[in-house]
Length: 376
View (tube, rainbow, N blue to C red):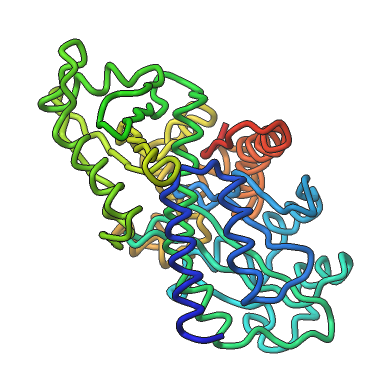
């Protein structure tokens, strides 16, 4: 693979990330761009992860419409050297199962499950934005006897992860705006090539009026909206190649924060620009943990870090408390959630609140509906 070929593939995926595709269409197009450069078995496995917990919210593989329950049990109940959250939070963000197992993966439950399905090697790449938010993961498989993943192939996928993450994030936002799940869902504003409002989803009027300079009744759009739309258009035309160019964080008139995302729709002279307006809010897992289990604020923080796979020492360092204090919080969390170990805690939260989202997204993908992120 030449440097030019790698750059062309990356530019293609970056362009796809800004085209306003739904998530399944984005994954499929990205698959086509990657496949010639990284040979693999049974198609690429794409996942979205909740950035707050690093738990799976959706899965897509053209050859596997439903992710096996046994694979989820292995992911969340088995102790292993290789899993999605572990790789996603790692410094490098890309890992192979053979490398993680020191060259001998025979003791890995994950590897044994892969072998039963005809696979052998596994490469995982966490999809992190340039800001460090994890929005997904990619798994690539090879059959027994195939060449090991090369340093060049691993480096190629590592270079793609930021634009893949941005594409996944925008696709989820676009889907949630087009098919809102609640009053705090993102809203979508579509501007024509003449910079006029062509369409808007429910809630857009309220968010526009909240932004400085916005007046929906007078037909006046806030400067922040026009700026994000302009940057998205320049990026689509190749005049601005910054991955985060079409994003803005704006303080509303009521003192809360709003995040604006720009993406282009269509091609050529008829190109339109979509601006997604999203209220900046705390990670969705916090109210879930509070309402479902009555966890205190500090217990929620500890639980979130446990779900992400952090050790007691790492949690203590993040929260600036002693390891003993972390253990005391964990004891209380275990009592309130009815589990006896960290692994049981992760499994309980996933199967109670995240597997329903995963299964719903599988049904939505089959029906051609946009996918959704976060827990149910």
